[in-house]
Length: 293
Length: 303
Image (cartoon, rainbow over all chains, first blue to last red; front, side, top):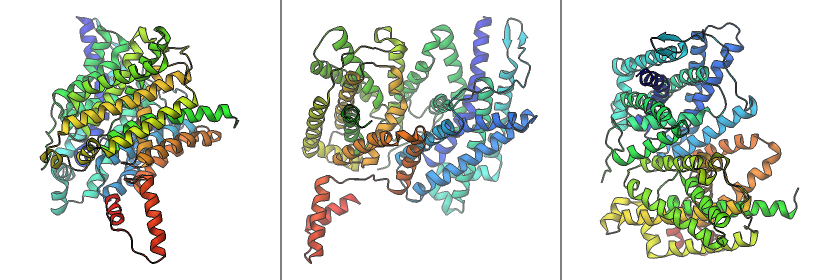
């Protein structure tokens, strides 16, 4: 029984990081209707920004470093939108061109880091006591608690912005119908700027947390593919869906790894992706897209 | 550095990439379906043919055919479930498929697991690759000029309308997907018997992306474009080898640049023969004669 609870805790901890990443995919999808595969690159950069904020700027407290990582990653995401997507948007290009452009951008970012910083694995300096918290038979590492808490706070802030503010209203309006919102006076370009900023900032937070929990290396973006699966699982374009999908994926993965075999971890995630697409392509909470005649 | 052995190696790689790119060209350029899982079909072709030649001592060509057949069957199964999906979801499903195939090979001891298979007979020669590629280009050209090829193009242009005029959309998507998978598998078989060893890591998502980029670089809906794309983008990294890791940085930037400046690729919608006709028509125009009526139509199609 204690193993069972332990697995759920591990699953929730990795799932909360997936959630931070997955909402970035979902935000972009909800308005631009394409899968932003460059998001993994932004997450990877976030991990590096955080690392440098901690090591170079001596003694920068954890939250300060987190803010730096979030801000810089947000700016990268915005720049990416300006350079790689805006020209396509102006031309009304099909979404697949966006995907290719995103993949090009992710190749660019990954290799830029390999060339300039190097392909080696780096670790964050120890910032918190490694001693785990023991609750009966179950042990929880402090960093897992921290990850979960920060993820929950960030997501709560995001939900607040989307549900309660005027900007959020504009975002929701655009995700229903971009053209009509534009006609109603919503500045679509600014909304898109904001979703990339928000998504990028969350990516920075996620990258830094992920880097602290595991290691930092240029191919982190590959792992973020799984957060994309989580976004599909929950229903692309739906934020609550992305969060629920991520937590479920985290739990399913850790259970699969724990009870079947740890080498099947990724296989379980990708098979889940196909199964979901076959049974219910719109995911748990996504909207059903219909072909317009 | 520039001895024949080295050049021959690159040319064989061009042939390998060309096979996969031709397959993708049929699927993406002519049927309008994107796939990010063709590395998976390549892997199936490579592994199945390698096992056939290495363990069962089957000659190369039948082994290759077996690999292609296995890949086709897989494509039909996957396609049956996912080709009904709308929009990006099919492409996401192929992404999941490609990664799953790699991870399955990674976990099966029969196929060597993560270490892969080594000492595969190195049968692939330049001549063999050339013959296979010429046959493949000819077959694809014939297909695209047949009724079936035109049906596929109709689906790319307007799925609902082609359904309305009685084209069995789902069936043609399946055919296109299966043939495309077989092409990728042949490429994989050539690859396996050129390198002499196989590892699941060779068939990562980046491989699929690389292939799709070649198709788009050459131009969607153009067989000639696909050939040019495969040749140029296979040679380019070799020429940039002295820049070491920077080449992939340039490569990524170039992809973004192509997408935002010339998304139809080098030859979008045109064939080499069209270019030749245009060139001649242009010459005639300069001499003061009118453009042939069908040239105008071609121009309209390409736009």
